[in-house]
Length: 514
Image (tube, rainbow, N blue to C red):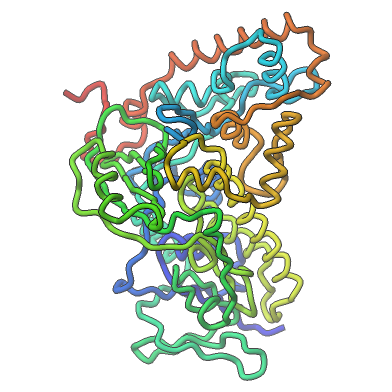
């Protein structure tokens, strides 16, 4: 074994690069690994991924970030779910909450009890009535979850809305203070080993040569190392996800400040709304085959609810992923490995998963990359992307927007076999996916199934162990308990003002604002 540290070279900054740098610096022994990140201020980053999932809190906690300090530095707000407007029929809305639906009774998951009561005609409430996070979101309220597992106020998790550029800057400061070396410059040449074909070194425009043992490709859509240099093919998913453009536009914040990302279906795609402390992020994801850029901009401008800041920025993309996330001695993280539209705020989670998987499978100092480590990384990479793809496609496939070409096409498309099985299983027996691996929990799948009209025809026999009158009594009591507790929650703007507001920021919806 060599005495020299194992050299990790990260190409690209932004959210992906600096999450990789910070995560690897935190998880790997500093004496055994040398981490260098190359980025150029002349190359912009996509940087519209401002909505996250609860997993980001685990990442920040792993780094030891102080939550209030992080939120002030990134203009962050709290988030407890995603609201979908018009994805069923026009005007209909539902929330994908970061929390559980109901409670488990008599050995059966809650959706079986809800299905039984609905089929018996004794309960007419939607599944949404049995989520505390849904009730709090609709009340524009937030408090940190309680610590008593028996309390309804502990039955949810939370994430953040933040400025992705400020988050990358925050992580950069954290990582460079802990030994990560940053180099400014653009890569003009990639040298490869004559025998193995592995990447040996990167040459910068300054003439500097940066050699490494493992290269992490965070170069964005260019995929300079994994895609262009090693030729790992792209798997196109546009047959299921035809949206290929996005316009992004910030606006002034408006009251009330809500703990929800909002995704509203439009004729040619959908618009997002992400409220931060200092502004609201907006965008329109659309399919160029069904919607022109001019129409998309008109739709976006009509959707924003505050004064626009600047002009819309156009992004072009294609849904899909690379055939592998790690080839040779190059592991790709972020857009260089794949892209899924931000409908369910998944981009930062996919970065986080790749960083933690790479750290766990990192070769030891002095070792070559073992093919089995690479294969395991790629197995996990495929699981994360493919199951996330199915979840996003579900929203489109289950739409009820008749008479609109894009939505008619999506409703009648041939689904991935894996997704068709999930839908059929739930429709026939109320069984929802519940994976040990994969991003979305059973409750996440339930929110979309039920929110977009996929309801079960039967329930588990286990649910029938509870007498129907007793079941209805429990349902009534649970719905009432949720409503009462949600009404007692603090308005989100007031809660942020008292805990983590950035200096000088006037929050929309503050009780003290006049």
